Length: 183
Image (cartoon, rainbow, N blue to C red; front, side, top):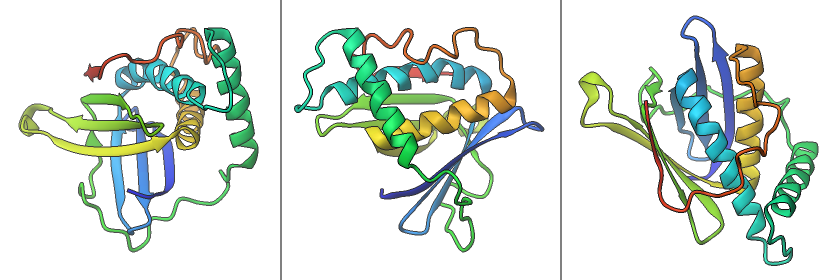
């Protein structure tokens, strides 16, 4: 899937984050992230971006501190060039998951050898035990963008997370296996 735009907005009525992703095939995927899911997922996304950035063959960052510094530098570089001002386009888009956002109850992360992170979002709630799913394959730059959008939405939501300002704390190790997070 060629991602064109991403949006993460706090919905105070739902007390959830609305993650919207559209691609170059004119499709929009809508997902709900609860507070509990977001706060459990965030440190693993941060660890994944550090791991992806440290895989760069041109840069040898072998220790954890150097890897975190490298990831932070690349994040700052990405954010200085990223376009966060263009409104999210949602006209004339197909909605493969439907108009109502899919409630994310499980997430699987898998670091790919090609230098990306595969995110599989699943809804295994009550009536949907068979599960709906949505998969995104994010390069490090898109993962930096997603993290930035989530962090901005967390500030607006005012969800308390004591260690939120320390982005890289707890990000020493990348997921060694394919972790699954359940709601």
